Image (cartoon, rainbow, N blue to C red):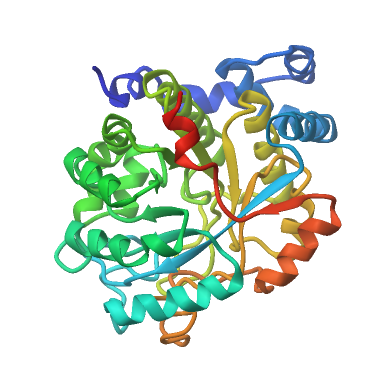
Length: 373
């Protein structure tokens, strides 16, 4: 089986960028008149020409989301296990060049964090680490999953890319989903922001979802970090990646996240600004393209924005997030990976969701359902 790299190389960044900025209002109207849209149509819906049609797109996105997911919003919480990292990433507080105190949670500290998180009501946890193979490699992750699996229905990870056999071994321990973001699909820009470390290997990271698909993982999360490059082109590549994965690993579920650059230790300014209305446009475009994909929103965004996107196509949301290892109970003052914007409590977010007529879901569908398929 070929990997996504073959599909990726069929496209040229500069040509795509030029095309996206040449669409007209008539092109947008034509696309919105269709019942189902293609990747070429998606390009139109993320173009500047689609800006005046956001309200129409939002109504359609809302209807499609309710049709597929009902009036539900899934809640999850990240738990940072370590801020140790062997990579240099210009936009990340954990970057190896930043002079910060490093910390990796012990077994006892992991369980202390879990105790706090369970009291908040969560049944879906996302384990996050820096990329340091020697200290937080496969054996550390395997141990962490073993420690906490009895406490959660769904365990996801956002860690360094791994080999297929590593993913297979973690799945056997109870791993449910893996989030791995390309950051940017622009190869030269990617290299600029990842000059050193294993993460500097663009192709290895690009092929990670393929290794995950072949491992039989239940769910894969993909996305780009908005601010490193033109968000429209990066989002198109993400959409191409999604459709490729769905075709080749059709038993797997998929999610897309929408991280925008946030303040952090070791500043880098966004190359391209993504406004709130840009992000709304993009969320709606993804939903119109694919009514099945899960769309996730983190606490990077401010409370007002997160209140308003509940009705626009988002299906999962985090709350009360701490982006530092031990941030919930062990060591609240340790360095964050990036600054949180929405600092409301889990209970406040739950009530906000309910006030808009939605039901809070604490876990994803049980794996037993898909195993029957």
